[in-house]
Length: 91
Image 1 (cartoon, rainbow, N blue to C red):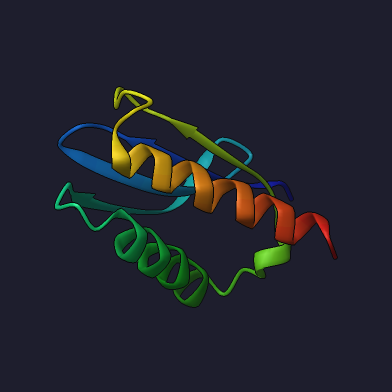
Image 2: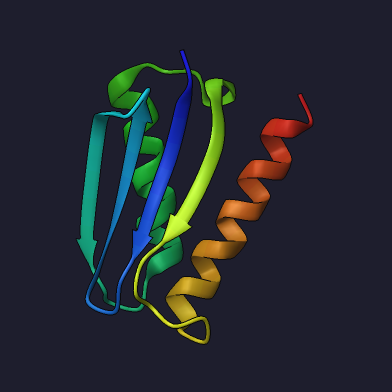
């Protein structure tokens, strides 16, 4: 089983999906309110709590969306993505 976290960051809202072999297992969305860090970390915890999937089972964390690179929420999302990817690769 290959699990992937897919985060879409748009100007108005964001969506975090946990995907297994192209099938969406869990999806959490929120509106942009200048609190990406809190919203994203809460969504990550909720996804793992509700699905029971081990965090180390996620092999990839992707990021896309129409938010520009200088958009603060996108930069926060990129940082969380990089830290998460670093952490799971240290196992």
